[in-house]
Length: 423
Ligand code: SAH
Image (cartoon, rainbow, N blue to C red; front, side, top):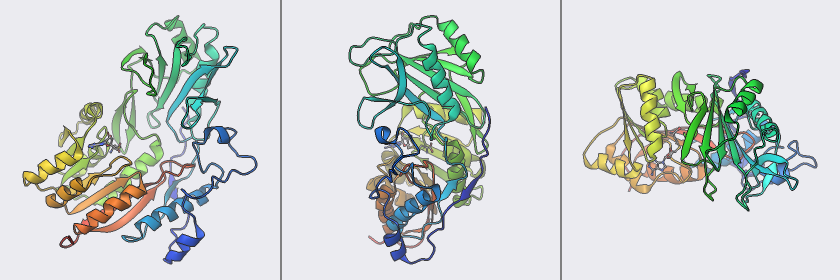
């Protein structure tokens, strides 16, 4: 697989005139701005798909608009640094999903669901998706007729193939193909695998996942490798991570490194800290931080993610990390009640943000620093208000563009314990 250059750079000025009115007047909130559908969008699927709201906005302008939005929300706390954008912002998605269906004549089609529906918009290539992944999906679609494999029909339940999911380890070159079918019986399985590998020898594993339920979930419970180990590895910030079909793993590996490096740099670790990694997923942040601290305690609600996290710690021979499967709020409350102290908290909650109870208990634990990684500036601003009331001061906020061409904004914020709380 050809590796793209993975350097990043800062785009767009930080709106550092310092004049707040400039933010407000010059740049509308991305949420309010029209999707700039020029007469002819550069994406042929723009109108039907609707996933990339900023597809026709020049990249530096996207970053300026997103910066203005987060800067306005965080204005009471800090001046937001420049957005860290991508040098090459297209084709960044290393997790690609295609729904399979057919036209009235029975010809196989693949694409994505039109927003909020189960109508399939047929797609050949996407400006966000990894091009190799798109090529593999096109090959599979092209092979179906000769192998007499029918695509699944949601209306009458006939057919076999429902979805194809591709996951790529950008830094290892490993590629996983997941074929999601309604039945475990895949006709001419070995020949199909052989033919696919002939076209794409760079595939390192193929998994058959069976999903026989009427559900909007892509993956079912049962799965079996058809070729290779059934998972791939990727490397991020020098650590190796196992990616199974269902593992949560960031979709933009270039910016994932930038995001975690930013968080670790901000934490300015000295080596003697006890760090808490809350909402830890498959353990990425805690594992990457582990060589730089005395001890990491990680908490995550999802059972499978905790299982993967333990495997990831083992693969990397990390011995100073402990994983807990628990609700982060409950865990924080228990820690606070037991009178434990920690030096640092990393928190990376889902879009909804954290809870007032979590913040209350975190304050009782009295860490010197908090590094908050947020995928929603709205819930971030809401939570910062509460955290600031507990005597923490926002020192820095750095937005990282994880999802170019969309309105999503990821921000890393450093807070330091300053004084008494203001309750
Ligand atoms: N830090 C990880 C994952 C961040 S995504 C990474 O960088 O990859 C947010 C994570 O929070 C998800 O793994 C989700 O399962 C977890 N989560 C959601 N609600 C939670 C809760 N109440 N308590 C603990 N973890 C939770």
